[in-house]
Image 1 (tube, one colour):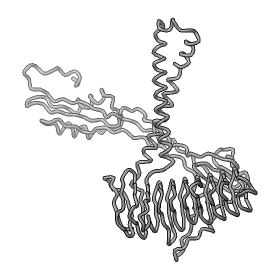
Image 2 (cartoon, rainbow, N blue to C red; image 1 turned 135 degrees about the horizontal axis):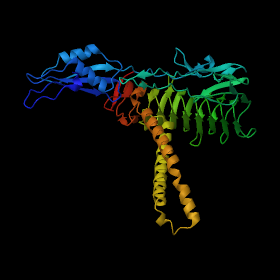
Image 3 (spheres, rainbow, N blue to C red; image 1 turned 120 degrees about the vertical axis):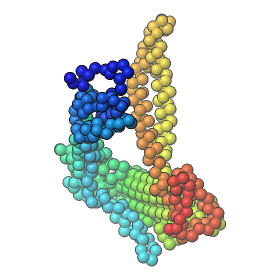
Image 4 (cartoon, rainbow, N blue to C red; image 1 turned 90 degrees about the vertical axis):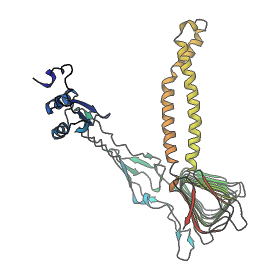
Length: 475
């Protein structure tokens, strides 16, 4: 007589042992729960346990020895034992990009000499490549290997993702789509996952009355200055061998200013990559990458996605507000006169602006979706439409078609908002550093934590701890 043919115990007879099977939610693990009998009752047998497992559909990864151990260990208290494990899938690896060495080279970071001076001239700003140069090779992702759960069902792996890359002007894919090749001689740039090769336009004098404003799709070299009221806008990098004097400069890539940036309260300088200059004063400056200066930043509003560094022996950040995604490093923070100075790190300025815009857009989409759902409910009540004109009914029907794409748009916005919020949570890696002295009046903000210096602090680094408090340590 098999286990399924056993008769129930007679009334008053001791309770026999029991056995049950439980599966994990992902069906990758099977558990056997064995409860021993009352004194004099029939114990659970291995055959009964195996029959229960068969009834539950467990057919892969079964460990008979574990079943035997669980049955042998039955007693007064129930015993739970893992008796089967599935084979987990091997997820695919993401694709990756192999860049030409010229694109990997640090884009003109100033060299600090042993005597403390900074060389702002030999920066190798332009990445020159010849037509036909392979600039990028795309390594494809792998699909992964399927797994099997304890029920013998296939578990699909997560395939790897294609790397993000966009081709700008002057670059094309090879026929197999795996390599990007320069189509022209020029300057190669890799900014925000976009690869392009552009020729360089040279202005051999000041940007002023004799030239008018300069706007160019590629990179620009100015042999003189940018005079008050004039503009230089370039899709690539900009090199100014003079100074920016109350002008406007916008670069899609890096910006190098041999002398200073003087804004006069009305100048504006922006770069998608890094910015290098001798000094910044009374100006609005923003960079997608790093900002490096020699003498200092005075009474300006400065934003950088990476670091802001005042590298020279007199490198000072005083007055105004400086924001950086990674760090602010200077010889001196503030001034002996207690000039109000705010330094904020741990927040990507462009990320914060994008997040705020997306939240407003999400709110508007949710409002539109609510109106569309109300219209859809109205259309499901024909008696309420009898008094409307045919044109009005057609308009309502068109509006009722909106919920599907509005829902998709809402989900897309919510996913991007979550991605940006996660990016803004890494403030513990950000810091502020005064390599020589931090004066009173300096306000340090890391994420949401704030510290205001009230005394002179020598050679200090400001970070944030697990309690989201600003802490001070030595350089």
